[in-house]
Length: 45
Image 1: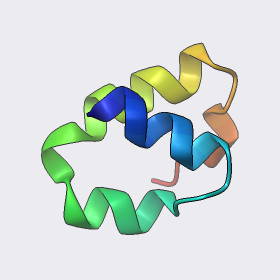
Image 2: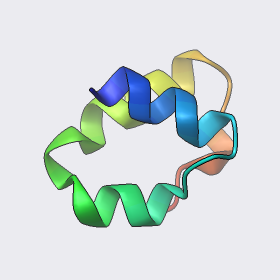
Image 3: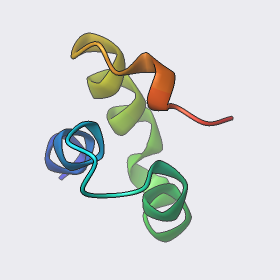
């Protein structure tokens, strides 16, 4: 699930903050996938 969400965030289809608010249990996996796929700048602290 985290991989799917990260891909959609990277494509601009989902908003990072909204996804993390709704699915906080996937934050670490989403962050890891975004970094691996070159979308580190989309991670909002």
